Image (cartoon, rainbow, N blue to C red; front, side, top):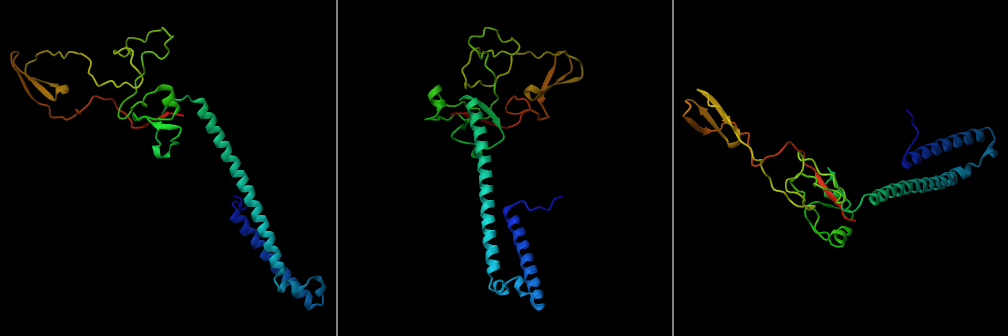
Amino acid sequence: MSDKPKTIDEKVAAIEKKITNIIAYVVAFSVVAGIFGYSQITDLSEIRSGEVVKKFKEELKTQKDSLGKELEKSTNSKVSKINEIRDDLNKQLPVGTIIISSVPYENIVSDVWAPCDGRIVPGSKYASNYSRPVPDLRGVFIRGLNRFDLEEDTPVPDNQKDPEGLRTVGALQHDSLKNHDHGFHQIRSQNYERKASKSHFTLGHPDSVTNGPYKENQLGSETRPKNVAVYYYIKIN
């Protein structure tokens, strides 16, 4: 693994360490040179007065400022690229597009997206184009319309079409149970449970049927499939 410094602070610390080592070497060499009469190699007074350290610090500040500018330039370039990609994506998605998300609304760009909670969004392109509130999708499932393209005549298959016909976007459809029959054969001394009404029948003699409470509480306040809770957002600008 490489030990090269990565951040500006790490680079500055590495440079300061090198400067300290260089000064120590220069001072040590100058002292030795002075002992042997070679003081002309360097000016000890300049070192003792702090001029060398001052020059190194000025150079260090220059390098630090240069690194900071390079980092700022690189960061601004990346942010600009991200914004460009986001803008291109927003242009490709038409106003009125609905998305599913796990991100709460406080983290959503509110001038572009709005929660599908039936609110009015005045001043938005959505309001100008459609003159109606956004769909209210809170607590409900989404169901496709019987027809998406009014110029397409291919009928929707009977086994999946909406029996209410051509509905409007955002229209709420209430819960319902399909018409059906419950049939059973009378068998002596055998229990028959009918869960749909929280009751059970005990079938004994063909002419006698007793009714009592259903013990296993598997029923709720609505009929629904297994599901996962999510957010729905709609593009308004």
